[in-house]
Image 1 (cartoon, rainbow, N blue to C red):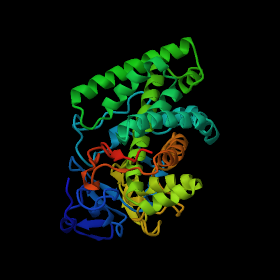
Image 2 (cartoon, one colour):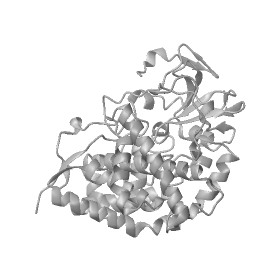
Image 3 (cartoon, one colour):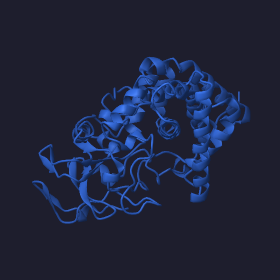
Image 4 (cartoon, rainbow, N blue to C red):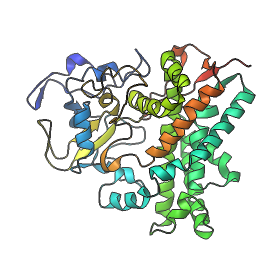
Length: 413
């Protein structure tokens, strides 16, 4: 969906004269790590009118302060059936269906609160850091296989996808004998090039597998998240749904951060050199990459009542599209926001959302990336792209941005 700045009209008070903007999505020109140019051009209008795919008139939020305020305000709902889509989605016509069982992203309190309380204690910083040794082990195994098969590889298939996939298997307690089949189904589900039939088959097989896994954990609990949750009042259907949610939220986002983050660091050799010179910058590098890339975008909310935000009245029933990538490039919050600078402290970024729905698995994602990036570049000091940067295929038809593949090469010693 293209954006014509000349058609967007001018804003007077809380009304927009002329045709409201649609959501800018075109990244075909410019830096592959930047939001659409038409989106960042709206930085001086942090909250404006926007026309949705079904003709609904709602709001587009590009400012950091406005985005943070809306995401933290319980007067804005996350329920899918109340939302209007900025762009059409294949297979979805008319109103969005309610969230499936176990999908806490599409719920409000008190339902959301019930699930959140059960899960929060299982995702503490301390508990996730205890998984560091397993992350290191899986990272080493992937790098060993990559080196043995080298000196060329698709970094996505060889590294960016397997590391978080193996950690999700560990978290959910997927038996070793089933992990290859599990990862194959997951890869198909998130494959941008797979057709609808293949994705449907993978989805059905995956949830059948999760249902069977829940039954197995109830019968013989092991040391994993699903076994732990079988002691709660959650039903088998809820447990399988939560497993599917953790899979979708924890695998695809981290995999794309690892792939796109590697591309960004290879494209900014001064930043990569700084990381190599000081591995203690790994944590800070991860936070800056999260801010700079903002792969999960946008976030949608619906106003449950009239709410005033930054002097603008958002009417009850209006859908608000929060552009995380634009908010994380807001020059009023982050100086020089269009530059990747791992020496900057990107605290306050919204890459994991904000408020009641802030990502539960963010600490695990941080651990995975903080281990994976330094290990990758330490193992392959001469790592570089195997194709010109403009030939890297971008994953621009999904609300999780990234690279479809990332051909890399290195010098054998």
